[in-house]
Image 1 (cartoon, rainbow over the protein chains, first blue to last red):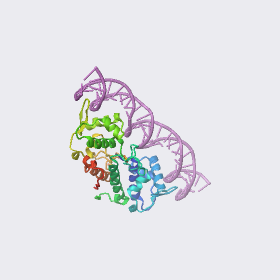
Image 2: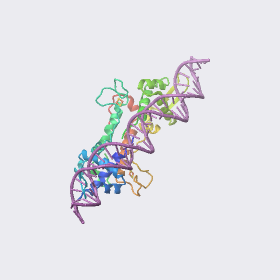
Image 3: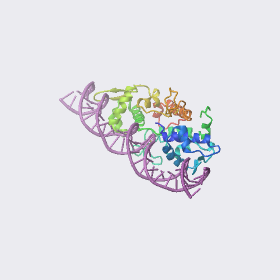
Image 4: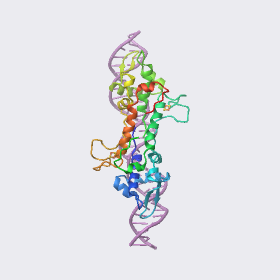
Length: 141
Length: 141
DNA sequence: TCTAAACTTGACCATTTTAGTCAGGTATGT
DNA sequence: ACATACCTGACTAAAATGGTCAAGTTTAGA
Ligand code: FES
Ligand code: FES
């Protein structure tokens, strides 16, 4: 169980973006420099964030990206979903009656993974970009 | 974020083992057949479980594996730790003062990943093998 | 109008991880 | 003796990861 850097970078970059978003759009080059993330990689990530309407782009000189929603309305769930960072704990298809072992019944640990998935998603749903802006906040779920 | 099948199988196999453990040791071959896990792979996994004193082995004919502790005392944490399934959310070294970006300060999302790690580990610590034995139990953390 | 900044797209790739397999062992109950 | 079952280490195909590279298009500003 781990977190890939695509999701990690996406959140990082959005926090950075939210901070500097006040007046002008923020260029990826700036984010790249401030956060130490490869520019080319950022472009891939923001392409997805844009498709999912989390950010808007402004082309041309002085262009950049802008949040497309209120930081309070951007949940971590949305971000992860946008960059295909999937919290996948069950192995089987959820709709299917079949188990992950190909047998006709769900495996003996199915319920466990399902619970875990809920547990993690709850965390992500309760956390918005705004929560991350105030740096030293104590948040317990 | 995902779960690898090594950890998944370990839990599966241990639940199976706990169920059939009453009188005789349980052979990996049986677990392999019942759960649809490759025997060779199971051997790797049980080798680690044994090193971590979660199971005991009994060699020879009619041999097999036996739990080394009360199911109530085997937490998911222990199992995952045994098979090197790591819940690693922060990227940086925890002890180090350096951030994941190599800079002198922790990155702007460090606290978030740290909270997440705690959140997940809490789940694993509160869940024992015994909890998994009664199949249709409702457990909410 | 020209140019540089910045977004856009898609192909490409090296490395690492995963999920095993294979080939040999060794111990032991019957 | 011999079958059963544990034990160990080496090996590997396939997928995921974490990028890079190249070739655009758009637009503000000089
Ligand atoms: S995870 Fe759903 S059947 Fe095994
Ligand atoms: S995760 Fe700890 S500094 Fe980035």
